[in-house]
Image 1 (spheres, one colour):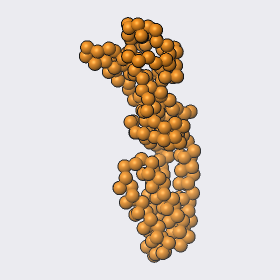
Image 2: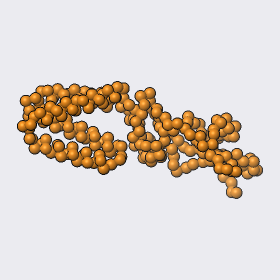
Image 3: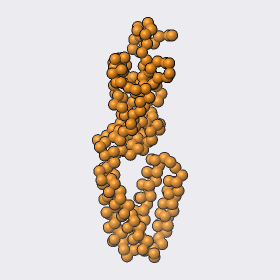
Length: 235
């Protein structure tokens, strides 16, 4: 909810349907998949929570990738047609990453590259004298990757709307479905300031209904005094 006022005009409180999204691992901090202000559809991943030890696991996987790559480069006598095909697929996905700004697509392409690199390493391990070492590195990497993936919690939305990470704690109470309980005393009790900015949350997000918006104002007219909830009058 926000408080809105123009010079020499009435003060109005903007009330919208807003649904807060959160999960069990909120203390780990979140990674935005959909940016603030971006439209989403029902079923979309909005954000995810970091897994425990994500930083160290990510670094370990990166180090293992380097070890695997170095081990494969040392096998200069391997020219498998399968490996050449995989190299081409990797390059295609790298080009796709350069051509998009979509976070979900980038995540997907990186995942595909990771899978192809493992396939390439397995082939190299089967064909090279250093195969046992390469296979050992692959197994260690797979274990780290499973631990990383199992610890990540993805948060989906079950409604469509616009993403926001500015949580004011009033989303449930000041909602169009709660009009019967909203009055002047309640609104003034929040002591909101005009243009007040809400800080970005690191623990939750929300979906805002971008099709309907209500503005609550205080009026002294007879029509206003006699108004009933969800009953409209002509002015």
